[in-house]
Amino acid sequence: MGSRERRPWGGVAMVVIAVAVCGFCFRGVSAAEPTFGDNFEITGAEDHVKTSADGQTWYLYLDNKTGVGFQTKERYLFGWFSMNLKLAGNDSAGVVTAYYMCSDVDAAPQRDELDFEFLGNRTGEPYIIQTNVYRSGVGGREMRHSLWFDPTADFHSYSILWNPKQIV
Image 1 (cartoon, rainbow, N blue to C red):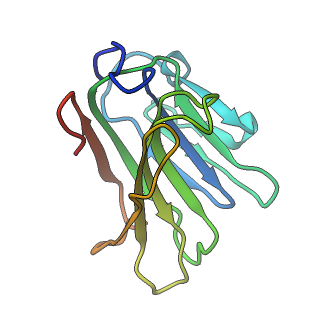
Image 2: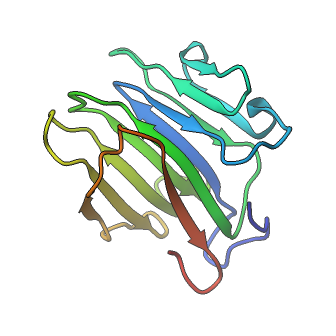
């Protein structure tokens, strides 16, 4: 991932994955030797996370009582952050799958944050990604993007390039 220095506008960031109401699947992007537990900690119901035999795919199972997610153990300043996701299919209205980076989960309401939020939908409707940027707790940069592909059909890569001059 990236450098672990201090950001000019706040603390270092962590990558957090969180989902609510349904389920999705995350696949590691490299065949690295470290295990899931070496790099991430589970947030939410630990019994709702299953790992494939090769340790490279993690399945998050949800129900109508709890959410589940995971976050990096390390904190990063800049870098290329990428995730391969396959979203829950069928009628997923009410499901929000979030891939975001924040200065510190305990710094609310003043934290800095970059969001990718995959909004659930009714069967047959296009999937929507909602993005937002928060600085010192202030957002107002929310945008919605209709996807031109089916994010439930296969794994797709979603990435953030974050450096001292830009966020892409």
